[in-house]
Amino acid sequence: MIEYLTTIIMKRSIIVIGLSFCMLIGQRVVGYYPYWVQNEYPANNIDLNIVTHVNHAFAWPDENGNILHYNNMLNGSLNQTIHDGGGKILLSIGGWGNDEGFAAVAASSELRTLFISNLIDICDTYGYDGIDMNWEHPFSNEDRQNLNYLMSEMDSIFNAHNSELLITMAVPISNWAGQWYDFSILRDYIDYFNAMTYDIHGSWSGHAGHNSPLYPSPPGDPDGSCSTGINYLLYTRGIPENKINLGLPFWGKKYITSDINGSFSGEVNDLRYYEIPGLIGNGWEYQWDSDAYCPYLIKDDQSKILTYDDQESIRYKCEYAIEKELGGVMIWALGYDMTSNGQELIQSIEQNYIENQHVQEYIIPDHFYLKAYPNPFNQNCKLEIEISKNIFIKVSIHDLLGDQVHIIINKVLPEGRHHFSWNAQDQLSGVYFIRTEIGDRVEKRKIMLLK
Image (cartoon, rainbow, N blue to C red):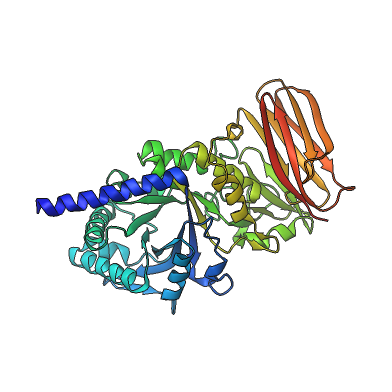
């Protein structure tokens, strides 16, 4: 028995060392791949140079420990496509509305064993690299303890069968549901946690807030934000930084109201990202919330607003994940950002996360902040600059060859927030760069002019 346990511990240690090495050479980018997008967004569209782990969603347990799933969902060819591209694929178990079987399975030793055995059979048959647990949510002290039993037994049985199988978990970011997760125990059995840093506001909220504000808006908003949620998981619940992935939503919410954070009426509707950019300038006006670090749209007649994430807000979230030394980012959901310009939000992750593995000081709100929007733009690009002290700053526009085409500002600016704009009426469509010189630092920001 001692020899067996020693072998398991050694295998586990090798995995941890391997994962640590991976962390040194690149971060995790986990993408949920829902069954319902597979026809419109085939697996070969997933950019596996960016996405490292694909979570195939969803299967779920019934009250007898069986694994249910959508018709024709499981097939080995999908998993082989991911493996051929160098990625890993996990089967995600649960999801919102698929929680009925969890409590019964977790409460019974016999059903836990059967459930885990069924999961192993599926992994072996179809070539999954592990299981992503997505019970939304346990809601009692009994559920909390039974989840501990389930995950400890899954970890032990998985390791005995195949020590390379991953176990991950989607988790809430506030104590409303988080109180029913014993992270002091779970962190020993879960390879990493996917933080659901979205749905922070919605139909259940007291005001029409952002789906995923990086920081609270308005400041002090009790509904929280990505940053308050990550702080909760890190400092209140004690999950290590490298075991947390920051959730990035590829969809938005439409409210019947006149402005952000106001009262609203009626239903709140979800829109996928690819449905949103075409609205800008076509009955909707783009706005930027400098508290939330997120955009939103206002309908021209001020009857509705739409909160969402764009390339710029994804950029700030990626930089936040780097600054906090988190283990990765997580996407809900792959395929939701496929526009005529390509996968715009995936591209932002590539530029601002994969290619930017050092801490950027300017994401700290009280230091230096530059926002350019909308991006892409069709003639006028607005710039917002916030600085914490009087300082000389030069902001200029350069073309793809590096030639300066316009100077925005070239003087000392006082502390505070400043607004500028660039009218590109005389320029050709294409890529331009905003070059910012502040102190001894030079920063470049890519923008795109589309006429």
